[in-house]
Image (cartoon, rainbow, N blue to C red; front, side, top):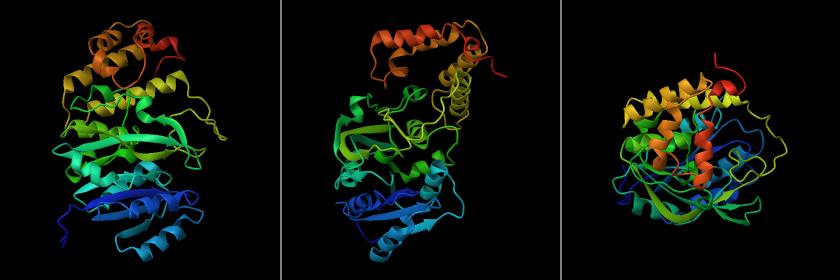
Length: 315
């Protein structure tokens, strides 16, 4: 029984070969000013000393619980498992290599209100934790509200910045493998209570060669081969299909209209319906990217020329 008057917040941590930065991150979780937390860590078959470090924290802290997967799930499904193990009234997601502000949970709880999810800004730091002189809000506009249109092509919400009501869990799980889990959380939150933005920088968001998301376009040792134009189109088409099939969907007509327009574009040499949709929904559809009018118009104009001008028609 929870006799603490403060709401219980579950911090869902996913780890994989994270020994290099893990201690600094875990210390920032243990030191949170909000005292009623449980820290749920799921390790995805690490081959370094990550599990040894985690067991040491588990031995010292009663609110720290470690689980180890029998097989590697990948980070999207690993976060899904971590969330399913959480007991808190609210759930926060945590990567293994960042550094949290010690007031992060307390400030987010004070902000969330009746919204399904709240998120905040983040500061980019290098592998030594030194500031790179940029915040995420320098690159993207941070959306709050209850329209799902801004998230159909873009996303401004990082998983490490999220705190969401546990009531969202049955509406967001299971995570689809076609869409990053943080974007899916944003989309499902929009459809089930809305999101609110906390204009504070509460995480040092570490950028290094093994970072899963490379938002600053840093050079990496193991660069993946470029994705073909056809594969990019199929990925977007699959995402829009998944959004349109979501059973708790708000604005279903608008999303399905975009899906049909994009499908027509993929299979055409020239297309009018997709640029028309982009123009009629311009303000929300292009809200997140911090790009100028000319850049967005150029993006729209390119979509008059159908997908068959890319690497080949879809099958």
